Amino acid sequence: MVAEIVDGKKIAAQTRAALAQRIAERTGRAERRPGLVTILVGDDPASKVYVGRKQRESKEIGMHSESAVLAVDCTQKELVATIVAYNQRPDIDGILVQMPLPKGLDEDAAIRAIDPCKDVDGLHPMNQGALFTGKPGMRPCTPAGCMRLLESCGYDPAGKHAVVVGRSRLVGKPIAIMMLDRHATVTICHSRTADLAAEVGRADIVIAAVGSPALVRGEWIKPGAFVLDVGINRVDGKLVGDVDTAAAAERAGWITPVPGGVGPMTVAMLLENTLTACELRDGDQR
Ligand code: NDP
Image (cartoon, rainbow, N blue to C red; front, side, top):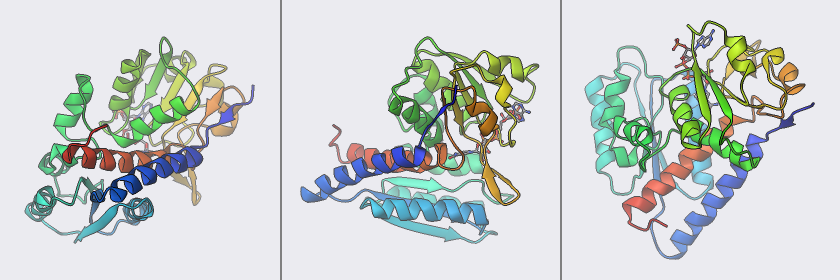
């Protein structure tokens, strides 16, 4: 079997086009544009690239977009004051604090300072609690993007065995809950898992979110499995995922490439969350 390569770039572009249409309809009715602010602390090159992309893509679909850049040695108080100021701005619907923050700053406290209604990354405890209890709320972007990729291939997780490798707040834990909500049977693996190869070998759906190049080997993949590779690793100047893509593609039914798979969907879901936040705040939920 040779896997279908799931084109995240194309699906993200379709998602953005649909969002641009919804924004154009709003502005056509003389309603305000959704507003997104990205808050970057310091000048980490990778973070600058990510923030730049979020800025560019939000503008392209017609959002109001602005960025706040704080010095690497800014205090927690300054960071929280910046967040609170955006909480109070009526034209801002989404607040994204680019992680990781420089050493010495408390990421949890920064996330807690964001108004949960503007927490478009879905990391505030209110939103994480909503996810856990199956209530409406902002969903974390990367797992939401993975679910959208499954849907775009017409793949129904119900009754399937999903194996998540990684248990972070950002990816592993939320995607496990989302898979459970879609009636998959879920296993979560991590650094203490005794036999990762055996766990992955039982998976109809593999979600690799570790940050370790080619950790998931091709021969582990059950024939026909759906492989979602979340990892982003730089090896010899090239981006690679957590899955040995070439070997896994020989066995999988579907596989997401790196780059061009999950990554573009993460940004698309951030934009979707921002528009949804705007609609909810304006009371025009459809
Ligand atoms: P974290 O570092 O927060 O979590 C990594 C997880 O992997 C941990 O739960 C850890 O286990 C587990 N792990 C580490 N080593 C092993 C191992 N040998 N076997 C099994 N599990 C292991 O990472 P994130 O979840 O934030 O990110 C994961 C990857 O996804 C990174 O490459 C990141 O760059 C990428 N990423 C990509 C995004 C995208 O848009 N495509 C968005 C966000 C992240 P333990 O808990 O036991 O330590």
